[in-house]
Length: 118
Ligand code: SF4
Image (cartoon, rainbow, N blue to C red; front, side, top):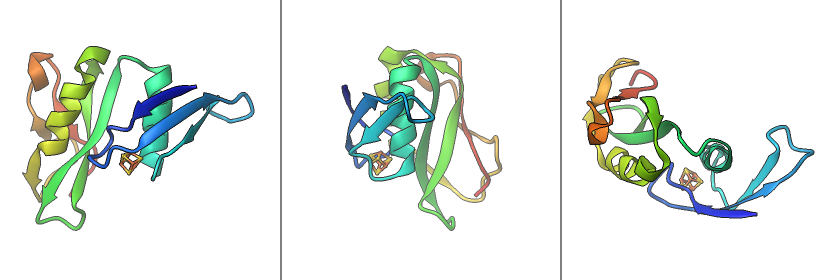
């Protein structure tokens, strides 16, 4: 069993991830309020260094938040800092899929880009 705080949005649900051979992902996630939390929990135990996904604040759009992802792997010890930056970043619609939202985040040599148009 593994406990972790979900960082996919600012609510911060407490997730409990348990190995479960009968699940298609190999794990069961509890404590999540949405599917993003489930994905976050599974990635947390299966991909310690990974492409980060998150949502930035969106102004003048249909949704309040815009899904984004990094263009490369973020080391585990930089994930918290990156998520804080992503969660507090504001953009204004219109945005095209692939637009750079945060250039060279934390100097890691990777960008955060829009995962969809808005
Ligand atoms: S589980 Fe969903 S609502 Fe809860 S922190 Fe994660 S993304 Fe936010």
